[in-house]
Length: 106
Image (cartoon, rainbow, N blue to C red; front, side, top):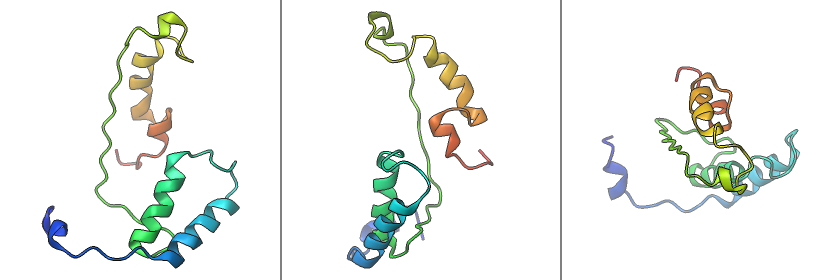
């Protein structure tokens, strides 16, 4: 299938049973409820779309943009301005939030 072929297919209905099972599954995992933020919501949505408890995503791409926008110097940010460049250096070694979920081969 080409990268754009999915655009021409008729959308499938959301599998309510898979959505309910994924919601329940999130509540029994050993982690504080909501601690993964939107990742939990996305996992539940993908489960409903794919009709399975543990959805699979292939060929996922994430772009990260970081900059020193000057707000850290005004005391608005929870982190100092030096964390921007530091975070960019840590991500390839899986030591930051987004780096922790990347696949080992990246």
